Length: 217
Image 1 (tube, helix red, strand yellow):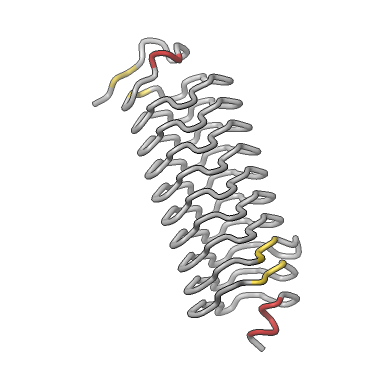
Image 2 (tube, one colour):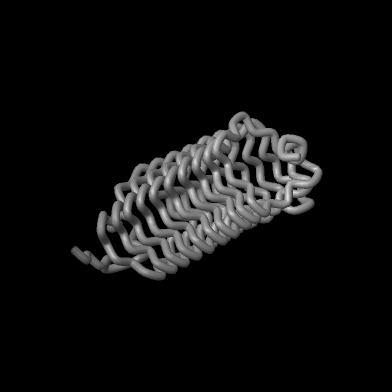
């Protein structure tokens, strides 16, 4: 069902399954609003507050979420392909089964977020805080994680192939890499101290200068 809003700037009219592509919602307070399956492709959401909002199945392709707050929001199954979300707050968010391929997320925080089974291929995660995140079966193929923080993250069966953390001291301490795939990942000089490595695939990975180099000599 496509319910198009009469006025994209009328925040009170935002309803589930509405279609408001390229809407200008800068600075709006949409906390706790039910926006499941809404179409916000290319929307301007800079500085918008979406704390605890229901965005399950929403389409945010190409939207601008710069410095937006989505603390505790539910984005399960949402589409965030090519999203611009620099320095946004995704703490405690649910991103399971979402697609954030090619997303620009530099400097954003995902503290204790649930990101299992999500797609973050080729995403820009530089300077991001992913401490305590659940990333089971998440794919980060080709993502840029330079200076990102993964302390205590659960990366069981995650795919970090071709991840770039080279020489920039990404923090990957106390992470569980059981069955994770790091084929061709560049982790040189990264701070890596996993709690689990059983079944991990590091074929062709650059691990010089990390604790992994001692384990795989």
